[in-house]
Length: 130
Image 1 (cartoon, rainbow, N blue to C red):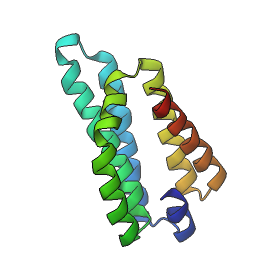
Image 2 (cartoon, one colour; image 1 turned 180 degrees about the horizontal axis):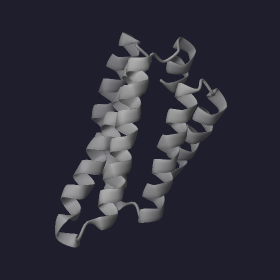
Image 3 (tube, helix red, strand yellow; image 1 turned 90 degrees about the vertical axis):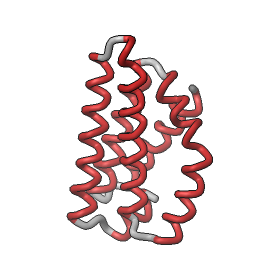
Image 4 (cartoon, rainbow, N blue to C red; image 1 turned 45 degrees about the vertical axis):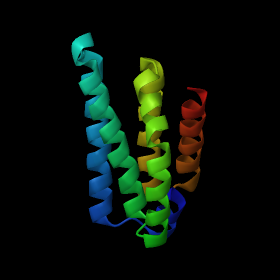
């Protein structure tokens, strides 16, 4: 999806939406660090929702309806797995995932395939390790 978005070129609207999703993800990550144990589930729920929104906007940015349908089906299947990773990953892993998201965003908006692909590969490595 990132390669498709880069190849097509990301328009200003999708760039702004993707940036807003990235910012929201960063805020959710920062809030999680301040959560006390009784509020941890709510904070993790917020982080999972922000992560989902970021990935959905990456799909939307490609403006490819077939890819969107396929990714929607795939997302439904692995959503529980991703939430498991978010809920069980340590702080350092979540911070590294945030860095991956940041590099994916930067790669997409600057049309830097290499940056985006390296970040995606690292993202998958982190998720698969959990």
